[in-house]
Image (cartoon, rainbow, N blue to C red):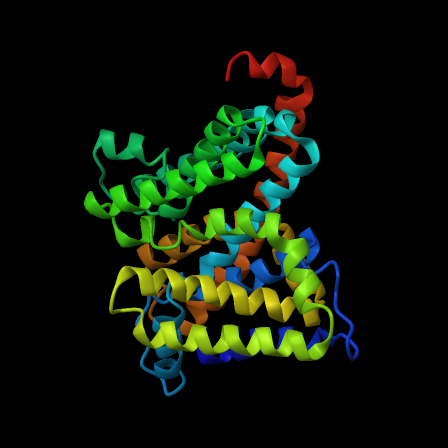
Length: 354
């Protein structure tokens, strides 16, 4: 499996551009750049999911599993962070109008795409693979709280975070600071409740990365002003983030606060890195444009191949699933884009039913 990670590393390195001395990439948090970073992690997520369907014992597999244990949930933190950042940037530019449109443009649009995915998994996981689930379990899968073979916790958390943002910024619509504080408090409250309810650690251990992205949006002009003055200040900040990341990485199992700081400083390292280093790759650009579909559909070919007994050869399994997911993503995105153009043709008519 390490071979696939090395191929990914080659793609990254072949597209790297380093800014000149005392110069920086002012657009480092543009959608294109953040999509590229998310694309890198989307491939790592694919590999992480794929190995749960196969057995591997090759020489290059053991190092990969060590790497997988190390990164764990870090593969999703940029998704949450940049999502929070992007929403806050939009609120700053468009104000309350953007927030009022979120139930339709963000929540409903994402949910009905996810509902289509659940319908597909119903056919594949229950109809073809023969897995059995109760009716209540199946219904809850539409919220992301339960799974019928699909990736689910991330969707549940995303839906909840959208609701939190909508409530916070409508209640405190005259103050982004108060609305953001409310968002942070509600997200923190969710993390505590999810922990108490034993919801499953994946449901809450990275959730705070979302409001962190929103806070970063507010603080970014000041952060840029400090660390983008010259290379010395940037390198000092980057080095400090690396040291703190390493410290909390070694101690993250001690308590949950250390784990949260571990994810926060992982993001700090990535953001500081992006200030100085730009990654360009047409391959990664493609994955960046199909983030949701590639992430949410990848388990379909995995379930199918395993149910038909084609998971004995691990490398064959991974390669076939990888290209099958790409094919499914293209079809799914073409279909949902067409459906979006029909459903959202008259937003006013749609809103009265939401």
